[in-house]
Image (cartoon, rainbow, N blue to C red; front, side, top):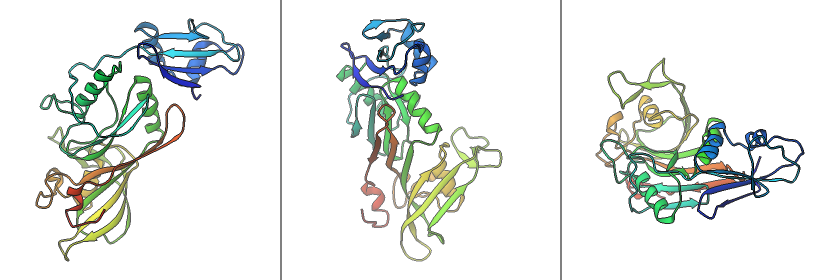
Length: 310
């Protein structure tokens, strides 16, 4: 059910409003039909949220009448433990009350780790939220490896994160990448359908292995450059599953490692980082169902690998 309105409350808490279309529906069932998960409802009830019917607070046992306006005011969220808000530059591609979509540079981690507790995209987003008075933590919907550049989607509320995660499970979020790889292709359109699992003895590296999880990658060759035996190819890549390092593992498996990706057989002779960029993200908005399409141009360091044109 699409909310009839979205807004921030007077104290900046996120809120959604829905209009009941029939008499006699219990408020608990109505909220479930409206996409409010049980976990979210528990947080609303016990962590500082409110459930209003026509502006008056009600319990979930209340029965609705057609035309009643149900408003959910979500509780304020605190930044996750270990996520320190920091001031930092952010390249915003799209933003509304529910979502923040950014263009991440290569070399910046998406989230903090033990080795890199600060300077990450999430640290800078937390700083933005603090400055703007947004009472939310950082919910990463789509993340990228440190050396991969391009589009990252962030939800501003745990409920929005839940809705976007459900969309991803159902195949409703589409990401497109461009990659620069070693070698030329005999076919212009390739599907790589090979299971991926963790490499024995490594906590980071993945590999194609029979007992891994199914992984499907679609590849189209955009152009090839270079002298015979020294070619590099520019690819458009679509993920149909979301395994860790999927593009890197699959392309290395078929003999075309990413330029700059030393973990999976590439070299840094032409570029100092893995030549992978998320160029496109499309989905229907989790609240309005309106189509959203966000694009990010391929950065110059990737195009310069073989003099590719934008």
